[in-house]
Amino acid sequence: MKQPPEIPTIESAPPELLASGHLWILEAVVGSPLRFRLQNSGIIEFGDGERVYASGDELPPQYQHAVRHICSRLDREALRAAVDDPSAIIFFGTAMQYQGVEYDWERTPSFLGQEVWSATNERFRPPDAVDGIYERLGLQAVTPLEQELPARDFDPDRYEIPQSTWYDGPAAGVVIRDKQGHRARLSNPDVGDVESTSSSETAPLETPLPEATETAATESTKTTETGTTESTAAALAATYGSDTRLRRLAEELRQQGRTVTDEQLFQRAVASGYRELNPRVFGPTGPVDRRAFRSELAALTGQFVQE
Image (cartoon, rainbow, N blue to C red):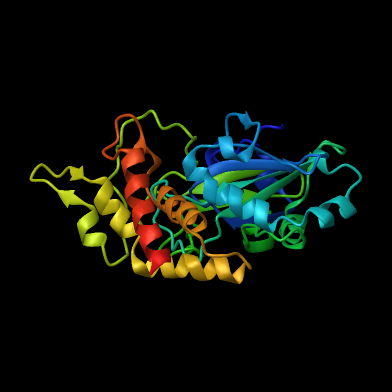
């Protein structure tokens, strides 16, 4: 499967990008790279920014919410009707999960599309076509902030980074594209670099856990006198297995025509935890034991269904 396209900084952008023509300005979202294609067998093949996986289940846990999102929403028949060989079309986007920016997870899609590659034509689809492609297939793309902006009117030194579409705060930056395939990113130094991290879980936890928003949030973290953050599996499970969250997840299942079972609810609750927490929380040097978290959460979801 084709590798994701490189997006240089605006300082390293090809000179053709700002020399002439028109530009599309898109919000640079922070998450983890995710690509996929529909194989002729009907199975969706997934890859992150580094490798391709035999099945979506093999991706790291923090990707499972995005895998489920794509598998349940992708209109396979619409894709097959649009092209002779669906496997020749590769979709690139971002699995929207915590990587330093606390998005509004309830309204932020699990996956946002950004690029579409055609192996038949050996080219990326132009930016004015990408949004419509994803919409016709049942998915959502990063909505352009500006379209058909004359390149001569774009000054990187004076450009003001807009507010994010996905939380009440400034965007992490913008991606600038043209129809010729040139790209660049302009980062917002107040939010952080817009490059998504890889799926690696081996590095130590360098950032604190995101501030939880559920009723049990006050119990999920404890700050020591030295300023470090300590967490327990039980406290995190109380947050991600709260009545408020489980009721919301159960309603989502019903709206999809699914029966609310212990397993279905547990899978969605644990996926939301993996999505909203720094993936290093459960890594080898992280503060929380993954199995203990899952066990505590399973008990809470089971109790919720029984009641």
